Each structure stands twice: as structure tokens, then as C-alpha cells.
Image (tube, rainbow, N blue to C red; front, side):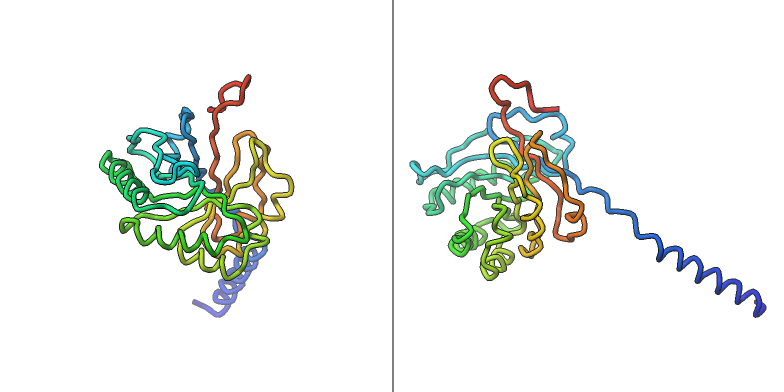
Length: 245
């Protein structure tokens, strides 16, 4: 190649590199949405096509602490990855509850479901995260190998949570689903809390309510820990039509 051609080739390469630098990369595709289905709710058809579904399976009730109260039959699906959700009103679980949870996991898997893990839905106060972490560490130790551990979280964990407690959570659970709603409406000012979510230091999803006025802030897509949304599907309000689509 002649010197002139080498110069033109070099100039062309520099020009193309300059053009590429002037144009930012295309925005990342939106993460695949997941769904949370409460007991007694008929899931809409879109749930069958989802990649991940959280199913409320049972409760540990304040007035009945010695058993896991089952809220649904064993699901049978070959599609989405399932999280077995336990709603907890208290954390002083006896061995009988842990045994029931292990048995439920075995039944779900024996039915052919692709079970990703267990999610604990507990309203842990921001100042009580250290104690909650102790419970979660014990639960994680009891879960079968290959079983993930997910938890729901409150918005103000990102703003008022103790950094040491948050760091300990990051070493205990696999993900957090941060709830952005109360009742059937998105919490006003949630964007400010969401900006603090990178402090959690672990993968998270944002729990949203169907038809609650949620708008995804653009900055979430830039956080590598962000895994998308979990849409909570509730029973229709009285006098309202079906919420499914």
C-alpha cells in the first residue's frame, strides 16, 4: 500500500472513530418485566409469557406462629421461573415452619416447576435491618443448595438504612424487590428514594402496582444492579372491572 493510501485509510479510520465517539450507544433494552400474583388472583394471560413470576404461597401469621398457612395449591407450569413467596408477620419461626417450607419447595419442584428460590415478604423497619439480617442468614443456611433468597424492601431503606446493615444484607440475599406503592397507588416522590438504591449494593427490582401511575425513571437503566420491575397483581377493587389484560 502506498503512503498516500495509508494516509487516506488512516484518516478514514480516525473519522469513523470520531463519528462513533460523537454518537452515544443506543439505550439498553428495558429489562423483562416480572409479576407478583397474590393468592386468590386469577393471573392474566401475559403472566404465562413472563420470564419470572412471584407466587404468594403461604403466610406465617402473628396469631398462628407454629405453622406455614398454605394459600394456594402446588402450581404446575413449564414456563416462567417461579419464586415461592412467604408473607411473614413474625420472624420467630419454629422448626415446624422451616420443615413445612422445605416440604413445599420439594412439592413445587417435583411438579416440574422451575423454582428460582424463596422470597420473604416482611415489613422490616429501617432501623431493624440488623435483626432481620440474622433471621435471613439462618434461613439461607437452611435452604437447599441452588435455592435463591429474595426479600421485599421498603423505599426508605435506600435513604435511612444503616450502611453496615445494608452491606450485610448484600452478603445474605440474592435480590431485593423494593416496593413503590401503598394500597393501589404509587407513592409520591418515589423517584428521590430510587436514586439511593445503588447503596444497597446488590441486584434489585422495583415493585410496582398495576394502573398505579408508575413511570420508570431513566436513571434506573444506567444502574447495573437494576433488574427491572415486578408488577403486583391484586384482586379487582370493589365495583371495578378485572385488572388483567
